[in-house]
Image (cartoon, rainbow, N blue to C red; front, top):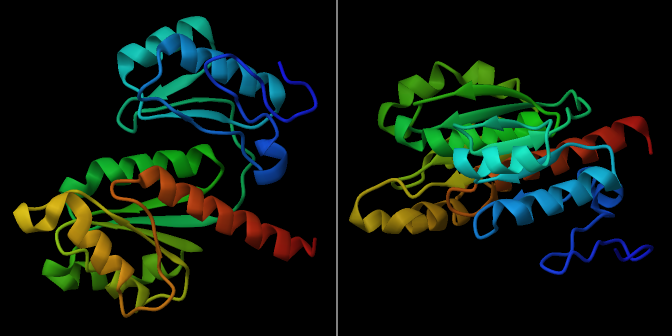
Length: 230
């Protein structure tokens, strides 16, 4: 324990016990590369340090079961590979998670699950890629009502540019590793989103539904502070 310094020293990890005070959410635990015992130790530290939801991303069923043996009370969303303890404070902020194709689904599932776990309202809109633009236009009104849009696409990565040209809300673009050879495991979509002619798009890392959800969380927290006048 490193009392007064904002972190616990567990030997193998130093959980940031002050992050909830700074950011409104405890540090999120990245599951891969850690043993269940290490995950459990970090989770226990974060649960003791604050009141907010504690999350573990990219964890499989076997690992989660072992962690829950050590730190009971959590719940696993197996499809999203997300383990969490505690319910969030609702932020009353609606996020549309818009996916270009069914193959982008796993990233959309993660984005939606993490967004809900941190207190955002989520509406999923799937399979509206630009190869059939009429499918997207049929959902334009639903997307436009959202406070922020998480837009997920692989292949050539064009969907966020189109969506950002149709709505006023912040657009958070997620390139996925879906596609044939020249898609370069998501690099082509990433570069397309970074060079979009639709101004002001936020772009996160390849396949990072988690990163998109946390970007939306930051926007929601900022909007809430502005609305309260604080």
